Each structure stands twice: as structure tokens, then as C-alpha cells.
Image (cartoon, rainbow over all chains, first blue to last red; front, top):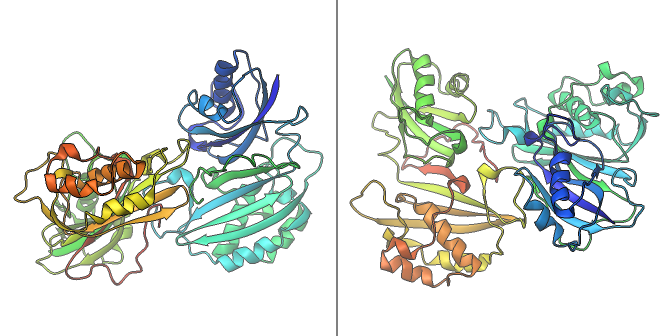
Length: 261
Length: 261
């Protein structure tokens, strides 16, 4: 049996999230079905983590064991032929036996995309969060600065699976501005349930002027979800990359698959 | 009665084209219905020209007469409140009595968007044409060079409404390259039925190496549709701007509403 990891992109609006659940189409399910056809046996796929309904991925990583004899560089083509629209395998790589997409992961990078056109964009509603209010991105950057580093992020976690600790390290957070749009890019060693969307929702309040940039520090310290801003919609959220101790997918010219590069 | 022109953006995948037709939802119909609510009387809207099902617009212009007393700068907000998702009025302007969105038009600018990722993009299928083949954009540019200027474009027109002459002037044609995508931007004094899509389809054949760049000159000279390439899909086509002798919409900060700026 080979231990294989794949890099996957998907349109979150076309699935009920990553994780398999009876009666709702998930990315895991369609991937496992495609792998079963190719492998000739049942395959269980482990993702680096779940994504909710509506959340997109440009660099989700999953690992699985398979008897397939297909070469790594042929696997994406073979798998994609058995996958429905909305999900695509970008790369595949045979990896050491101890690699596990979730347990080996050391961090993740997300992007939260916001469009700031005055009127509701006629297209792409599922792919960006539209905010018609005037936003001051300098305020957003100032507020974001308080979040960098190691903190207890309880104020930014919605009720979800309970965890031993709510302490996480945010290694990077920055605002990439484009005309009529911007991306909030976050990288950390791990994220609590809905944490990126709650951080985005809070920083949008700061950008609107409804919350002071320095108040982010107080919200963080209070460890109370009720003090943070609303959870921003799933449509704007993209899982961009999963980070591992050994670099993954170095060989094949990596091409990204979403808007905004 | 005021003579009013509006600049409109719409998602072509959500309508059966611009022009009103019984039983099929068109942009013209939803616009006329919104205007009837606002004006208190039946309104007939004239677009700068039709767009087919699936073709998008970021700068379609339409004109109409209305009794509405709303100020120009309030009209987009009022109209958008009565329009379904997928279409948005970006600007409105009261104009001279002799202005007519179609008859006053002196030219149009289109963009044809192509994605060149190796695998089918999981999202945005309705908004770009995906071409997995390797394309040589220098060949595309070289082929495009033959199209500039005044020519009989019969080779690039599909059977449609008959016209007096198939001579048109292409004022500009250029390739704007992005990572994993490019736009073919065309500006001319007018375009025959499906002309942009047929030019795009032909230049894609040139980019693939299936047609020589210089053969474009021969195809043009032959005035035979069968010699040109296939009609590229509607999904990639955007009406970007309609050109008038008097500049339109100068007052309000113009914001665009589609991908690719």
C-alpha cells in the first residue's frame, strides 16, 4: 500500500463541507469514490482538517493509502476524470509511511476575500464577501497587529468541537488591497472553529469604524466570544495552504486554482 | 419625460441574454419592470446592442424615457432595490433628448477571458473559458495584428441578423496576460454577430499551434466563415464599455464590477 497525499482545490458552494456525512454531498465522499474506482478497493481519505459548507479551498491536503499503480504525476489526471465539477486534484505525491494530512500538519494559511464595490456585484456572490460600507484598511491593519503572536483566541471561536486549549499562534496576518477588493491573509499553527471568519468579521467592524483598532487587544484579553464581531460569511473564506515540516509538492510546477491568484 | 441612460453590469449566466423574449428571463425585462415600479408607467428600454445568453456585461448602456423625479445619483440605488441578483445598475445620467443607447453608440470594447490552468478550475466556470492546452501568447498577438484596422469581417461572423455591410474597423486588439489566465481585449466601431467569440476561437487555434499566425490574414481575405476557428464559448465574453461621441458617466467615480478589474 502506498501512502499518498494530494493537493485539492474545491468550490465550497457546491458541497456540504469537507467531511463525509450521510445524505449530504461532501468533498471527502466524492474523493473517496473516485479513489475507490482507481484503487479497486475502499479508500479512506484524511483531510488536513474540515472546512464548512461554502468555504473554498485552493490548497487543501488529504492523505490516504491506495494500491493504485498509477505514477504520482498521472494520478491527478486519473482522479479528475472521476470527480464532479467543483473539485479538482492539483497534485499527488507518494510520501513516507508516517505522513498523515491532519496529524503532520504544522499550520495553515487562509485568505478571506472582501469586495468593496458600492453596489452588489452581479457575479461571483459565492466567491467573495461583499461589503458596501466604506472601509478604512489602515484601521484594519492596525487592529490586525494586536492578533499577531501567541494568544488564547477564545474570543474568536464559535462553539464547536471542544479542544484542550484555545491558545494558538498567529504567524502572519496582512491585508492585500486591490481595486474594489482586498484579501485578509492569515497564517497560523492552527485555527479554532470559525476563528478566521470571526477575526474577519471583527476586523471588518474595525474597518467600518464601529470598533476601535485598539479594542481588538481588549477583546482578545477578555476571552469572551460576545465581545468580538460577527462571524463573516463562508463565501469569502479560502484555505490556501497547509504547512508541513517537510515541504510538500515541490516537484511539479504548482499552479493555483482560484481567483486572486 | 426625461431621457436617461444607465450603465449596467450583469451575469450573463443568469439570463437568457439581453433582449426581451416571451417565456425567457432577459436583462431588458427585469430592467423594464424595475423602471415601471419607479416611474409609475410602462418604460421601454433600449440597449446599446444585444448580448447572447451567457455573455456578461460590465458596462452595458441602456437608455429610456421616464417620468421619475429621482435624482440621477439616487436612481441606481432605487433601481437596484427592484432588480434581482445578477444585474446591477452602476450609474445613471439624464442626457440630451437625441441620445439613444444604440443609435448614438460609436463603438464597443469587449474582453474575452481565458483561463489556462492545467486542470479544470473548480470555481467560476460561468465566468471564464478554460483552455488546458499550452498556448503561445506571442503567436496570439502576432495573429491578432492582422485583424487591426478596417476589414470585411465576414469570415468571423456567424449567421445572424443580416447587415448592409460586414466591414468594420477594429481599433485595438491586445492580450493582457495574467498568471494562469489572459484577456483578449478588443475595441471597434461595431461587431458582427458572434464576431468577438469567433475571433477569440480563431486566435486560440493560433495560440495552440493549429493555425499559423499569418493564416489569419488569409482567413480574413477569404470572407468565408468556414476557414476561421470555432466560436469560443459565451462564458468568457464581457461587454466592457460602450463608446459615445460625448463622454458618458464622467461625474461619478466609475467602479467596475467584474473579475479581472
